[in-house]
Image (cartoon, rainbow, N blue to C red; front, side):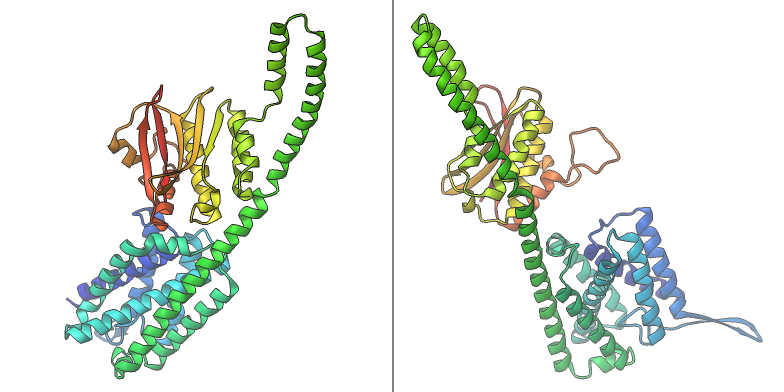
Length: 435
């Protein structure tokens, strides 16, 4: 009976720690080999921390420890050092992060898990339930938190966290360890003064929320700087291309001037003049990009326009509102544009015309991309925005995350996904976001 209780407690602890760590490590929860090995190794460590085997005159005596394990899976200073070291080692192998980010992620995950565990203990104490329910309640809280907040946490965390954030997380981590160690791992000691504990938990929870907010602002600033550095200089290429066209235009004007004087008939002059004018006209895309109020987005679209030309398609831009009216970060706007244009390119064939639209309809701002395609049902449209969905053939590369990311970005700004069929002459599939 004691062994089954021990296995259940350790299993719940390992699974709850696994969910928190993989959430903050931005790894997908899955029943794969990596997850199994991670959980198995942590399970073995926790099991060995609570079971002692001593030889006696009567044979081997196995002792199972249950005292002071309510807060953590260990109940000693050596045990907590070992637990942190094991988590750091497992996370360094499981997560695609550098060593410094692994330390930061492990500390952050440990803090959140410890806060949830303490809140579970407080809830059990308040309800007058037995200590056997602590781990079950912890798992329930973590599952609810993962279901509600996992996508938001992934957006707020960055692979390049600020030094200030790392220092603050390390300080909170150290504070929690000192609190637990000073109480000798006894939940009863920690909860003797409930008012102080509640104030401490409130402080730490508020502080962690503030850290995540600071981290989010830091990430947005980094993304804005990166987008500016990457795409703003590209607009110079467009300006150089237009200047080259202006030089060519001057030569064409001279040719037209001489044409009027030397042409035999009006019809001949008209045909040659038309061909001259067509050759120096700016394309729709070039004209729109030169007049766009957002140079970073214009630079990005110029790179896409060149890609469209390489694939022998045509990109038509319709814009009736300033780009700055879209209330979202530059990096998010560029990501949405990139995904929608790439999706349209993959679904189109040589000679197709792709339409990019930035307009206002019924008081809402719409950003859409349309391309010729067969009629699609509402169910097919819904499937397109689900994670992992792809109309392409199976391959080793991850698929089906582009339009899912568009849906996530739309949710971030309380925007609505647009997915519809349009039939001016041939059926067009239109995808986008309405703000």
